[in-house]
Image (cartoon, rainbow, N blue to C red; front, side, top):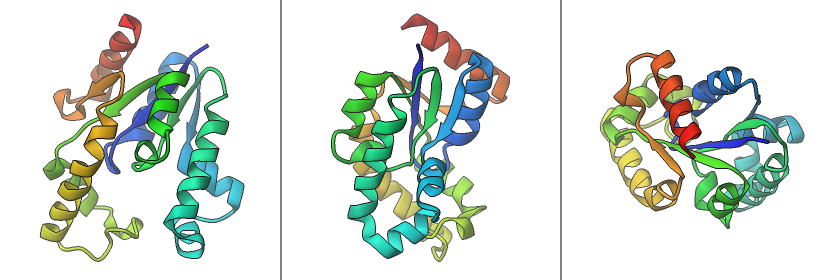
Length: 173
């Protein structure tokens, strides 16, 4: 039985890496945000607006614990998932956690190209976005660094190398 949780800030590539890693390991893939959206028939943005962040975080934690019981799966979490309740401790006890780490500069560059799809950042200038990412990453880093594996995507250029590297780290555990 394998259960792998991918964590990290928005824009680190958790969904992309998760899909490829699941394929490579012949496991199922679940994107936690998509799982929540499917269950509630609403976007994450709608849930935030209608119920507020506190209620969303409760839903998110409950859904994490639901998918965390699945076997042979790679789970891509939302950027804030590890930072609330006992979510990080839960993921560490239920499987292997991998933190996809990136610098605030790299993240703000990536996010700037798709910010219209992300309500929290859509109206921010480049400078405001960098400040926002830096501030939030600083707050979240203590949770993220509890991961079993910390991987910096900028280290390797192509995805095949990245998947091989992550697989090697998993095999060492």
